[in-house]
Length: 316
Image 1 (tube, rainbow, N blue to C red):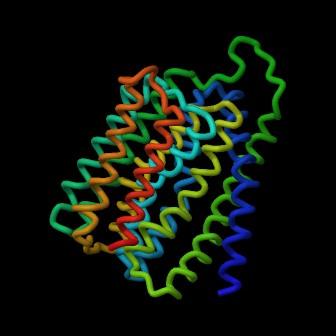
Image 2 (cartoon, one colour):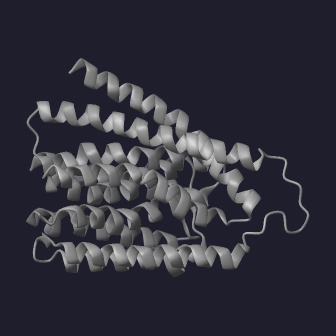
């Protein structure tokens, strides 16, 4: 037990260090390549920081633990919006890029609905998993093509001189930061799971809480680092990209490895909460009560929703 607690502490410290290096390198890389920060958040940061969810769910599927595999993906999505965006907005209010409302948030709502329909029979078959992976591949290709069309991927096309780190230095910190980010999250999750299992908690609840929060810590650390570097597009794009990745790729990869049964609670409890928070995020971004942003009051509301969800799980 003592070694598990030590793993949690070390994992947290390494997460804090590596997130700043990873986001800083990504932002400099985007500037030098002419890539919009939003695209970096959705593809580079969102994909990279979702790697822990992918590895955990894949290993859970291989070991025959469907509760951890599914709970990790959907619990991470709930934590990303309720916990991560809530905390990030309390630190600094987040403004919405228009393309988030026009493309990315509707895409997230669509894939959430599709995944609910595919799992309606409480089964994730290999065919359903391949459908999810196919949709993910199409969305990823569209995002990359859109970014290429907007930026041209032509660095310094107007003769601008960047005073930041070199391209090689930026790439170095992106890869080093990502490697330590993933390794530290795995260390943290391992310690947390060992502590939870010693208390006799079921695998679905472990997946929805301990594992989900643990694998979402890279998103939390990266989003906080992004807003402190005045890159709100990376923070919000990170969460949306990560949720799309979790819903399609993480669940799809786990199901492709081994078809699994889905607990009924996932359909009547967890996925509706995930859909509700996605809708709330869209309403905040539409700016019905002011400019399109998540202010501190709305961030507190997201945190309250997440706290209520966790309390319901614990009470159950």
